[in-house]
Image 1 (cartoon, rainbow, N blue to C red):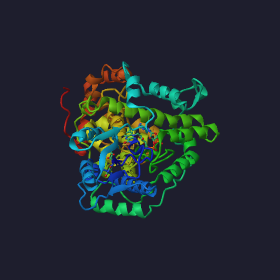
Image 2: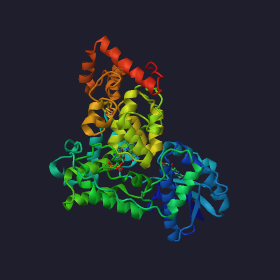
Image 3: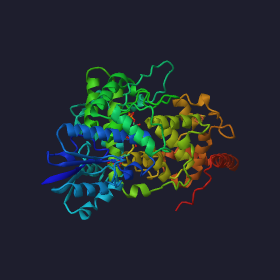
Image 4: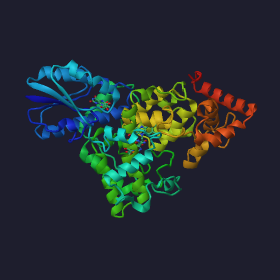
Length: 516
Ligand code: FAD
Ligand code: DLZ
Ligand code: SF4
């Protein structure tokens, strides 16, 4: 009597529910398969990161004396699907009487795995993923009957339930949210801490070569590779962040700087999302830094809000609204994704910087994702499916449960306002205020129209014109749409002409269909 326990590439936690009660006679299966490595054109550093972390995790389990079946991408007989590998393991190992797994993080796989009880001859037990702070049921209870699913109120409940940054029933510092203090641009002379990267070990090196050989034309740089691939190294990265970057995290959370990918951000999402770090342990360490006077409250509250608030909230939204969520296209956006999202070949300095960073590190920080590439895709009316695929592919932390609400909902407003009360549309003035990109750009951020004008400026108004009807009931956009009403035909035509010329120049002339 033994169990086959399947562990996926983003379930690399020793306390994953699939391993609860594991015994020496059980077989733990981890498999590198094309179905997972190629369902979107993943960044090669992301694939190398996931495979290396999987291999190190398998080694750690073996060193406990546990029985691991590890299927490498280039192993003979690899069927390249998870189902095929479960089937092969069942055939190869006698005496397996049941399959145990933890629910997957993506609807795509959940749908597939729901069919497994009929597919295999042994019972399949799907366990809850209890690495999250809020369960699906708890989120559904919170959401039930609410007209608006406002993250801030969800976050307050999570603060009360976990006791994080609470003084009895009251929030520490007398305020739930210090966001107003967390919107500073980076002043000249601020020292950005130098990151402490990790030298790839032989396991990572081998995986890097494998990925290079299997995906020679894949997106993104494999070298240099400095991410942690073990829990121990991920914990060191957490400690580095708390000591060196957390104190300024709040102040410069929204800042952008040319050539600086990381600023004061934690770069922990890839470890949290694949299971090397646990969200509560990360929040508790940040809280302890405040309690011991090592980091101010605006930084620690801002950081904890991202994990306890946003991260849990987006997962709740994903599972509450899937699969219908990703079929929505509230703004009827239809244009194709411009080629420069892959190549970085654009004269727009802000976009070129974010895509270059993305290519190099499989990372960009939140404001780069939301207000540069996300904002551009929103204003240009890019098809949400293409944008989602891009975000899911290019970031090392990207799994659909977290990527989709952020992209589809927060950045593109394609969900029609479940996540955001209005589209996060911004003209060049916002990017200019928060960054130093515009000084070196071939476009003029102050010019509103014409060949030299910053494309974000006319695309902003073109977006408002294209969506005037759809958004007219949105109270938060009231002043902007009233302003637009005053635009005469000549101004409207000028904006439309600039936008059309630009779309043609970047090869995305396909126009939006009429709203259905
Ligand atoms: P920090 O800025 O240091 O924040 C700390 C932690 O808070 C992060 O590690 C992350 O776990 C969490 N967090 C912060 N913001 C969010 C958020 N909006 N949603 C969920 N968790 C959050 N995050 C992902 O983990 N995977 C994705 O695929 C992803 N796609 C995104 C796509 C778009 C269009 C946008 C706007 C945001 C996306 N995010 C995604 C959220 C956020 O940008 C990243 O979590 C963050 O940039 C990761 O870098 P960091 O670890 O340095 O984060
Ligand atoms: C992201 C990823 C990649 C690139 N490769 C694998 C793999 O070969 N085997 C595996 O088990 N998991 C991989 N993953 C992570 C999965 O895609 C992830 O488990 C699902 O998307 C569910 O969130
Ligand atoms: Fe970006 Fe416009 Fe500034 Fe150029 S001028 S960097 S396109 S915001």
